[in-house]
Structures are given as C-alpha cells and as structure tokens.
Image 1 (tube, rainbow, N blue to C red):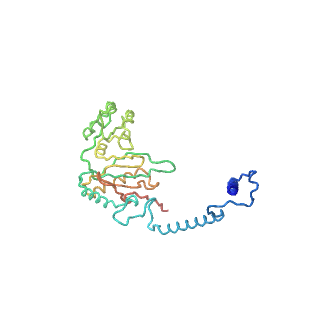
Image 2 (cartoon, one colour):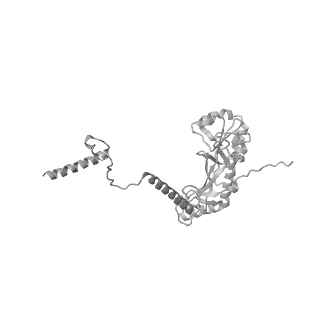
Image 3 (cartoon, rainbow, N blue to C red):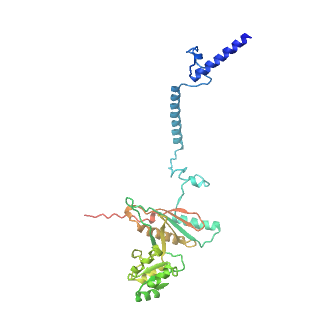
Length: 326
C-alpha cells in the first residue's frame, strides 16, 4: 500500500512543478525545483528572427508574382476607365458595363434609330431627342450661368405656331402686333391675369416703354420674362413675333445638361442632322472659345430607343487666331 501512495505523491509533485513553472510563480513548495528544468513544448514554432525573414521573402515573392501578372494582363490597346476590360469587345455578345460605350458618326446613329423603330414596331412619328453635356467652368471658380436659348431650326418639326403675348402701351405697336398674329396684346391690365394664370403664352415680348412696369412678373415668368439680351424687348414688334412664333426653346437643366427635341424620326436623315448641328452651334455661343470646348458629349435617342453617343467635333467652332502682319 505504501508503494502506490509514494508513486501517486511523486506524480502530483511533478504536476505541481509543471504548473508553477508555466505560471512563473515561485512558492515555498517549488524552491526545490531545478532551475534548468524547461517545460515540454507540445507544438512546433520557428524563431522570431526566422519568421521575419520568411515573411519578407514571401512579400517580395508575392509582389514579383503580382507584377508579372500585371505585365501579362496589361491591355496594350488602352483602357478607357476603371472597371473596363478593354476599349472594344471582341464579340457581338458582351456585358455592357465592362466596356466603354461606342461613339458613332451622326449619320450612322440616325440610321440606327430608324432601324430600332422598325425592329420594335413602334410609331415612326416619334420625337428625336438630343442631350448635350456642357462644361460650364470658366476661369478660377466662376462658371457660365444656366441660360435659356431660342433657336430657329432649319427644318421645323412642330406644325403649330407658338403662342406669343405682347406687352405694350403704344397703340401703333399694339395694332402691328395684332396684324402679325400675336395671340394676346395688352398693357398693364394683363399683369393680374398673368399672375392668376388666367392668361399664359409660350413666349412673352414687350416694348421698351412698358418693361419697367412688368417687374412684378419676374418671379412668375422667371426665364420667360422679356429681356433685351434674349431679343424679347424691342420696338420691331412684327419681327419679334415672326421669330418667336417659330422659335425652338431650350434651357440648361441640372446645371450642365441641355435636353430637348430636335426632330421627328420620320423626317429625312439630312434634316435631323441639320437640326442637331444648328442646336450645337447655337449652344456654343454662350461660352467664349478661349476657355475651350463648351460641349463635352452629345447623345441622341428616340422616344422608344436607347441613347447613342455621337461624334460632333465637326460642329464645334474653332478658335481663329488673328496674326497681325507687320
């Protein structure tokens, strides 16, 4: 009986030494432990110095592998932006968001819109829209203010004439306005009717003698308020009515976009192209050429088709340098 008890006592004493050594606590009972005794390691571990060396080797190896992979996958044709795989797809079936949208010549894009209409069995008498993205920046922090433009399209697509209202207190000018097709003619008595939405028109023009009395309509008419720089204030009433009856109005929306109708899809392709060219050239007049191109991109679409980017560089005005010969 004494022998088993002795063995049990020896085992317990050994376990106590092992636990005390790991905890780093010295007790009176452990003073007899051999100072050179080392706990048994039950796992494999490499020295800290070697670990750093191996980590540095792995990093250099990975960077070399990534560099080689980048060299292999580098697109020599040139990428057009983040997320794009290549400049052009290699097949006619591809994921659109991975490739830049193609740019077409104007004549090709118009024919594509006509083809889309036939394939979709939609109405050929539908509107053709143009969207121009503008660079409104000028020098330093200044920029071009949003504006409203009036354009005489070379091939009008609207059958009805615009409704023109004429403000004047001149009896002769009022008679001229009526004879030339003005929808509404009057003086300050029209102000309450305009404020109460009893009278409205597509365009408002005025003679200089009454313009000062119309300031109460500025908040109501906003961008349609008659102004000299827009050509809606003057003494030549007959000419102003003629212009605004057939004028096509467009405006800058969302700070840098011009979105407007330019034609009908059933019109000849040459007429659609001429209307778009007139629009682009008219928009470019609102920013000096010295600050660079005003129009950044142009899209055209029909009421039922996707939008197509087109190349309109040939429509942009060029800076002409004046060289003084001595």
